[in-house]
Length: 336
Image 1 (cartoon, rainbow, N blue to C red):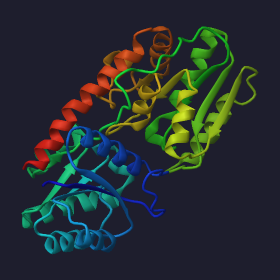
Image 2 (image 1 turned 120 degrees about the vertical axis):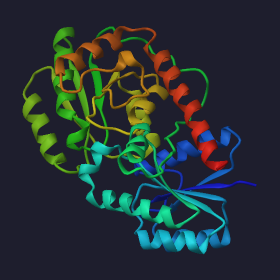
Image 3 (image 1 turned 180 degrees about the vertical axis):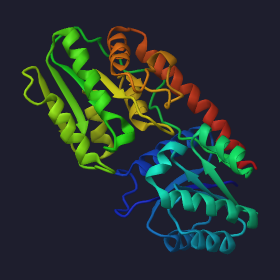
């Protein structure tokens, strides 16, 4: 019988509640796969030895390691020691984001070499654009293993449209330049001026990466002192608590310059909250998308979503379509 293990790096080693996005992604993907009839488990691991020891006592037919972080020599040792297990390292970044992770780029290149020499190892990507690029640019195999998002029920939470009062807008995620939070802040301000409303703009804080502190300072410089605007720095939370914060919003802004999935947009859909996104989040509804470098266009789409009674259902339909096609991709890998 096939059994899949999704292994992610987690120093805290909490299996069900994690501050780590890869852990949340693995848990969601695992739940969708189980609902699809696939035997799957999530393992937080801290090293290749940790993973190898667990497999020794609890074998699996397939192991997918979330993100390239294990040294290639350790990967080679794993695939040699467990030759009847099929392994994959799944890159969770699209090509553009890899500029922030030169070590990840090196490990991706080395994974291609490992795959050439091992019958039971594959390089994979959770982005349709990434795996197609690898195949075209390097003429090497790359497997498509997308993020899946578990929806607790087939019905969408009912939420009333915004009709006035304090407008709560969230821009969440690791505070990185590629998340384009300054454009989100500028768009939120423009939306608020159009409605003549008070604004609470919630920005993620506590996990600043690659200039994140500068981003938060710049957002404060843009908004501090405006009488109708309150900038709230939302600290890093466990996923269940984060979902509560998302549910508190009227609108999310996720105009990222590059993405491979974007969990926050899916979290919003699960709570009945629409998101303005860029074309980088390709699975989202087309009419949720704005030009990522045009703040007024982000604001335009945001105003539309605040008043569209069908936006929530459109988001749910798009996510269910993504899950269905993604499940087929995982089944193809497992049946390889």
